[in-house]
Length: 59
Image (cartoon, rainbow, N blue to C red; front, side, top):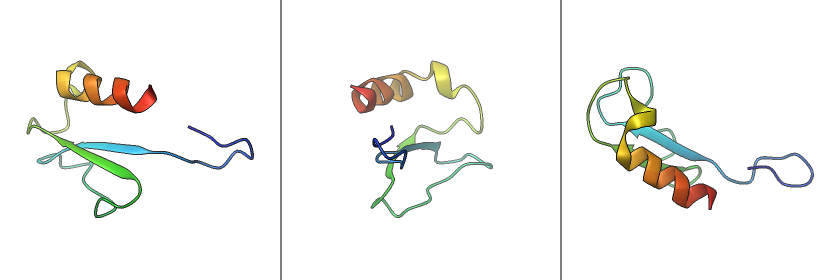
């Protein structure tokens, strides 16, 4: 999500709590963070929790 000047205005960091590649990065301040159930670094885009969170975030 970009502002008119091209700067990033929103970012949702979605990560699995046991992912060996991605993890939390902000301490929850900015960007917004959303941990999902353990399952390693796999199947993010078919995870119901991820899909629902993305829909809400993107409006």
